[in-house]
Image 1 (tube, one colour):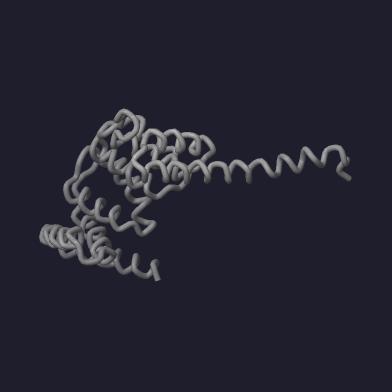
Image 2 (tube, rainbow, N blue to C red):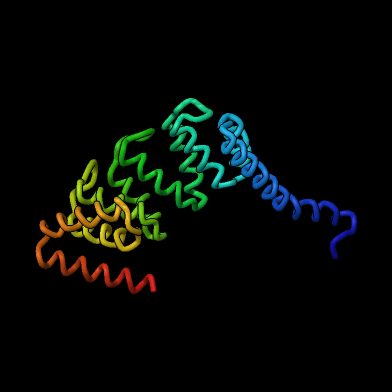
Length: 203
């Protein structure tokens, strides 16, 4: 039996995570409001406090402020740090933005292979922009990544199917046709099978 004198301590310990989560959400909301009012300095302060309480969206938005230089001095390396913190907590937007940072070499050494790894995490979560980015980077190749027309065709086809009528879909369709022109029949057959397997998994 738990001694009665220990019950207040146990109750306090159980309540602490809930209180922290609620506090983090309040700080995040205050940051959103500040940003909406154009006060990005205050937004950065609120999101920094929320991120310290493991609020993934706050960490992501703080990374975006550092990337764009709003409310803080532009610092790509700090942006990557905050994106990585959010990514480690499962934030899809952070996965995508880390892919961008590695693709561009902003805050990190340019590394197309690393960009693919981050883009794929978001793409497999049905992020059409990440799927598009994967198709493009496989078409172009880059540091640590050979050009792969089959992978490019596959991801651009998936992206085009997910986009509504917009310029991204039009460009995806254009580049995937160019990728197909450079593929052998064997490569195209394998890519089409990969697409059928993907579609079956999504059903």
